[in-house]
Length: 606
Image 1 (cartoon, rainbow, N blue to C red):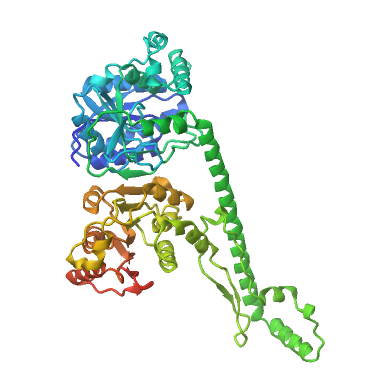
Image 2: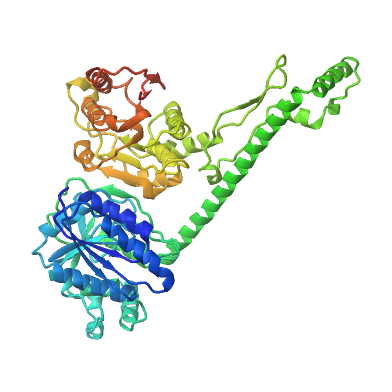
């Protein structure tokens, strides 16, 4: 996109995070970049600050770069407030990103469009890229209005920032007038914000954003919030200024906003704000408790992984020992001796060597179907130990309990059968085992069942840094064409996916949500907004002729040699089959179609 809106980038001493956010900014090539940096707080910070500032030198597009670097450490409150004062002394409006706020694909477009749309509307003071409704849609339009100015990626105008006073000089008057009660009629929330603003006014909190919230509320200003999340906060950890602990809103997945549809009325969305009041602000302890429980569960998963690795190693060691033994003369003589004793009736059942009895029966690794096994990938369905070339093999079987666990988790969220689940499960593992680089893509997500398989393996890959991209209109099946034939018409508008269910099942299978992009909208709107240079696995579940053809035309060339393309509907819907066959004929391509069940097929790109 052509980003003409200035971008303000607030940095400090985290070069790794700064690089990631800078890379996102570089994709839209803003004409003007204003960089605000705090100074080192100690000698130990000096090198990190230097490395962080050096990243800005990577600007390689036509861009006016303005810098405002502090020589000494000013702290969060003074540095950001003074930095933004400087920004709005230079420009009329700006998109603002801190070094830990990683924007999604359509954040910049969203901000630029709405900065222009509400430029002269004094009611609107803040545009945010944050949505903390955890997958719940609050409007039929692209955004709604709120009283909460979330600041993890946002934008505003000089006309609004002029009301900002970091010292909150008129807070006592506003507090004593009772006007805050008009903003927060709920008595608990009124007390919550009164306490926070009072502590900020007294200098007990080194923060700049509460004074900005106060400025918006004292001017009766509204915030624009997207109906999907556009920014994820990646800055929680030991280097964070405040965010030391796990937070329920850390690393939320981002989605694409698609074509922006403006609401006809400018009113606070009471339902969304009520959710924020109850679950975001007034119920933080419960969130932290839930996050703590998730942390404990992750530890259990890691322990389960370690236990399984040890069991697998024991099997490998036993196999090696037996392979060595069977080649020795002692082994062969011993075997003959036991056979002679058996014929003479001198060999009681318990006289066999202990280890021989142990491997003479099938040995099952009983891995319980619990979250402890969720991140453990079974590499094979069975291991065979050969006792003697002339004797019957005694298999040591490792049942693929992980596959069964995943299938059980995703079954409520998908319409596909077990064969297709297993096929995608195997292909998702092969892109690692066969060293195939690239991301995974699914076109047609429904409620996220098969997407969860792809995301589980791709986002937890131990070989590659992969992302998972998921596209769906979440409005049901699109219109058909004559290629789809008569039966397909009955399904137009049916099979409507639920985005909240997609997010739920992705979390159930332990997907890394920082590496997941869910793009909501029709394919012809969302496909042009992304650039996926390498694809390892493409799953097309788009049913009809036109969308299947569009998927291939858009993504086929990005699928790397050795990568896989799976077609969910090839055998069932004639439109899908025609689109695939035509595409390969037009490209003069010849592939073996591997059959999964009556409808699904897959190919491996040459």
